[in-house]
Length: 285
Image (cartoon, rainbow, N blue to C red; front, side, top):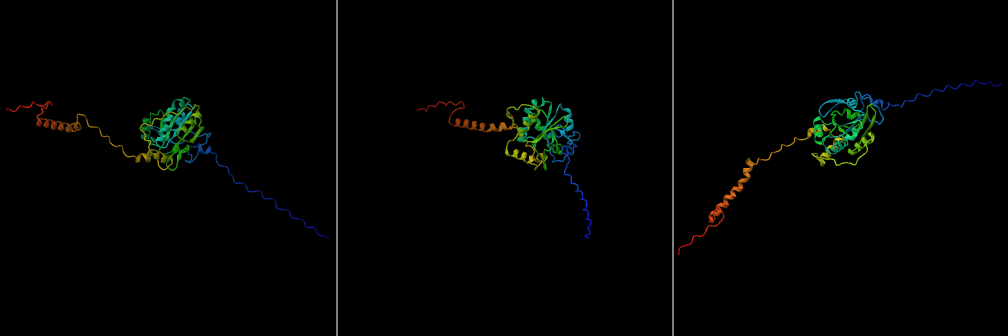
């Protein structure tokens, strides 16, 4: 008789190990506490917490302010365009384009600001020379520039535009050229694009030197503060000598000497000062 052995039961299957979660914090949640990484990129539709976002900055007049205060004072939100270095060619073009579109853009309820890491002194000169109707914001520490994604490591500022509404919703956050940044704003706030106007460049160098400085700041190789500190002081302008001064007397001296020489020569020739030769005296026979 064959003995049947009982088959051993197979061991129970072990449950699969739990999968590692690949989830990351949402981009919005990591950008709403005001301490966003310098390299963070805001996306259209993100909602930021305005309180503390970007820290404290100041106007060209030295008045301290924050992004929240600017938004609170606006009717619908704020437009902030960033530029590498005040009074350089590209930045002047950009600032003047926003200047020329200021009325139709602000009529929509949005407030306009320029933002750079320049000092209040540099931005005051820039604003005055170009007759800019909006406030320029100074951010030497790049705290606000960084959180809106416009910092160019290690020291520069990217040209671009950032728009946020009253609820903290990001409507635009992108880099672009002088004309492109204005067109982005016009499209979002509902202003029809107009033919580009001639942009005056009075008082601004359009040479290679100015362009190279602007490029280095935009590429992050140097900062606006370093450029400002490296600039030599303006040379003293010499005032022209007064018409009644020594300069005038010196300039007339050669003419007086020439007249005296001519008068002496005429006398030697027998010609009186009046210019008519004297009649010859007849020689007695």
